[in-house]
Structure formats: C-alpha cells, structure tokens
Length: 237
Image (cartoon, rainbow, N blue to C red; front, side, top):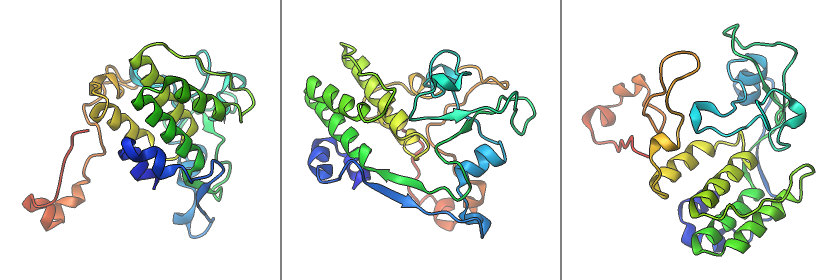
C-alpha cells in the first residue's frame, strides 16, 4: 500500500487514509543465524563500514543535525547518533558516527511506518496546491516529537518540494526509502540528477559517478534473460 501511495500521488491520500499513524510493519531479527541480524546495526556499529552521513556531495542533507554535525546534542531527534571519542571506521580514517535508531543486532527494523501515510497525504496536498494543509500535516507530525520546532512555509514551489523531501528523509531515515525519493525528484519533479544526488568531489578521492540506481551485479551476466536483453533494464531515474 505504501509503495502504491508513493507512486501515484493523485490517489495517494485516499489509499493511505485508513493507515494509523502509529502503524509499524516490522522486520524481526535474531542473533543466530547471522544472516538474520539487523544489517544496518551490524555494518554501521559493529563492523563500522558505514557512518551517518552529513551534507554529502553538496546535495546531501544535514543528517547529523545542526552545525558541522559533530555534536550529538544538536542531532535531529529522528536521527539520533553517537561517536565514541575519536572513533574512526574500518578504514582507520573516516570519523565513525553510530546511528542509534537500532541499538543491537537483534533490534526490530521497520519497512513501513504509519508516519509515511501522513507524509504521503501531505505530498498529495502539496501537489494539489493546498499549501496550508500540507504544512499543517507536516507540523502535526513534528508536534509528536520533543525538540522539533514547527516549520514555516518556504514561500516557493521548489522550496516546498525541498522541505517535503527533507521531512521524508528524516522521518524515514534508515528505512529504505531515500534512493527511491531521490529518483522521484528526478522523474516526477523534473530535477537534474546532479542537483539531487551527491555530485562533485568525493571526500576520499575522485568524484561521484552518474548512477541514479544500484548497478547490476556482475554475476547477473549468467542470467540468460539478462544476457539476451529480454529482461527490463532501465538505469534512468
């Protein structure tokens, strides 16, 4: 239902109207076997191969909160994090910021939240030009979390879209929706991919590439449908 709502804004508000804001669609995890562990926690906190990003690639959002993103007291409460002293990641160089949404390798993760139903309704309002209703829906959600101040209308169409997708990014952080939302900004809102995805110099060397979706694994070449060109393969947004 959530996927349908995100893809068809004209019918989205009706489709998700009955979803309670408190709804959670869970993934349950276990310590054994190891492939049932919470992968986000494992790769971020245990293996330190991932760190919480902050303003990446010029177009990234300030996911670690106000300022330069080094003070956990200034974190957005929807994306809590911590850093242990001068901890660095597995490359022994990159500062390591540990996400606190999931705190153990058995923490339940979610692939659907009722909050997203309200965000879908808000986006539908924005598309329909109902700016005050859109803003009210966003602020009604923010009022449920201590430390989130009310939003004000940016006053422009582009500014409102930016705010809409920023709110989606923070509410749904680490729930698997961000890549899809970036692609929607290109496909449905006419943004240039270089204005949506990280671009320019990469902090560890080189530059960000042009891909707007995940590359096809090399092993897929063994699939005769893929190799023959029968399979649908669209690398565009």
